[in-house]
Amino acid sequence: MRRLKSIGAFWYDFVVGDDWRVAVVVVAALALTALLVHAAGANVWWLLPVCVFAALGWSLRRATRS
Amino acid sequence: MTALPLILTVFVACAVEAIEALTIVLAAGLTREWRSTFQGMAVALVVLAAIVAALGPTITLLPLTALRLVVGALLAIFGLQWLRKAILRATGYKSLHDEASAYLREVAAAKAAATSSRGRVRDWYAFTLSFKGVLLEGLEVIFIVITFGANQRNVGAAVIGAAAAVVVVAVTGVLVRAPLAKVPENALKFAVGIMLTSFGIFWGAEGAGVTWPGNDAALLVLVPVVALVGLCYTVLLRRPQGVRPASAPTSASEEVTSS
Image 1 (cartoon, chains in turn brown, blue):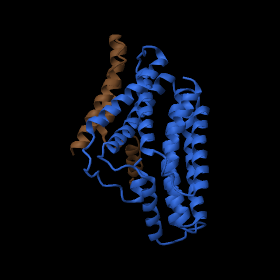
Image 2 (cartoon, one colour):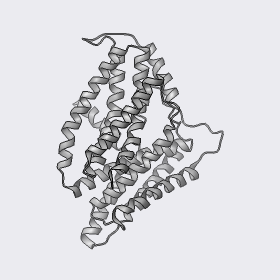
Image 3 (tube, helix red, strand yellow):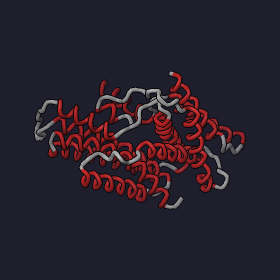
Image 4 (cartoon, chains in turn purple, red):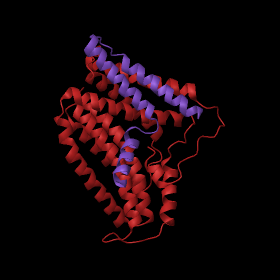
């Protein structure tokens, strides 16, 4: 069990890293993009880049304030 | 996308990881014992090969749309990690990754550690240091090779880029017998963060169903835009000169995982 936990912690740190909020924003933005494309037929190619840049700025602001 | 940009992107990303692995292997080999160091490196390479053998064929079986969505998300998250750290280093909020000082810390720790043998390994410390360094940096190489190669349906080209990076760094390391401190590693990491994030955005959005204006040519705009945003954040957040950066990692394990 302890080994499984450490493997999970390693992969979390490997992929997600220091700020989990960035990962949440990317996944949420992709889900919203897919929803808008498939349900509303809108080609929202700009949505993911905008969310990614905002998430990066937000994360940097948090890191530099702490 | 043709094979050349794929090979070059993978080459640069993997060269950064290979430089970090080389620093650890040199510290273990030169201060402890080469045989145990090579044993650790060999076992790590076998583990990495097993991971590639298990993951490689599986991931290429996924439908391209699903693959692009999953891999795009992973690459964007992974790339943003690199970019975030590179910007924090460039602005002085995180200490610069310095191979020369990392090497000195590894050497000091290696000299202080006691020697103990286990089975056929004469120096367990050198073995584990080398194993851990090569495995962790190698995992990042595999991640990059599989995600880029599978997405472009050209794993061979990605492997060529990665292999070339490892060979160039290893040969240079053997020739100079010292960590490659003169390589502008922080600038390279900034560039790799930009590439990983850009490809992640591009493939992730395609996987979600988006059609990019200009199709693949959109990458030619997306990469400079991501770079520009990264540079803008760097300028906006730059600390005034004379302010001390955050404390540097102090242990070997911290250094291994701080890329």
